Length: 279
Image (tube, rainbow, N blue to C red; front, side, top):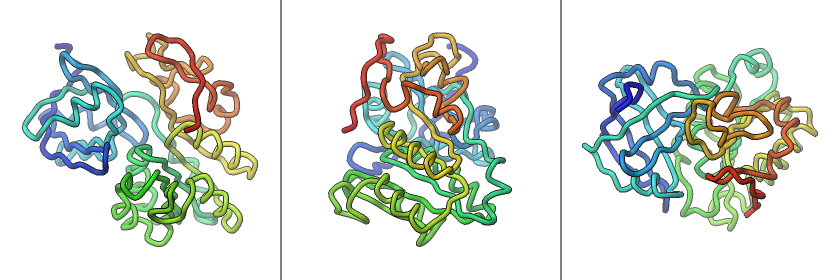
């Protein structure tokens, strides 16, 4: 085994919703936790099965633990979901550039901040929500789900932002009926945000980017692409020449507006481009 992998032991497991699970991982060697920041990601290796990226929603050096929340989308995540406390996984990283916090410090005192998450894309935003509210900054959070059966972290985020949390579901079974984009459009009619952050399905991010740009609100978004090596070598995660694992996965609005593939194309494991379908 390569030395840059860290062995972690699953200490707890929780089913968050229909296809979303959380594992808490304990590391005897916590070096991997020291360089974590909101938006960075790690590679999860399950020997004999798969290796894939995940962005932790919690990490703590004192307890030497990391919490991973993920949706079952392939063999790797299906195998991880089937694992139980006491079993070992292997982790390398962290990789990429996370959310840049400094730009918000001078702006947020006068105007509120906005965080938008869609589906399991909410998970990587939890550390960011914690950092912002820890600094007593005025934060509004919008979370979008398909239905009440898909919701998770609602109580956890409410404890951070209270009434500034807006929940949307496509079928109206919880919160406002509609999408997170619809809710943000209404919020922008009565709130003047100084900065915004988002993570979720790319069609959602693309619509938000257009909306926020029209309003002149600077923003950062965490994009997802197929990641193989995470070392900037294989090129599988490239979008318009930018490697998600090196230059991303978080991009600000000045870069996003230059990306012709943003919201339009992604790459398959083979490297072939295919259109992104807004489902």
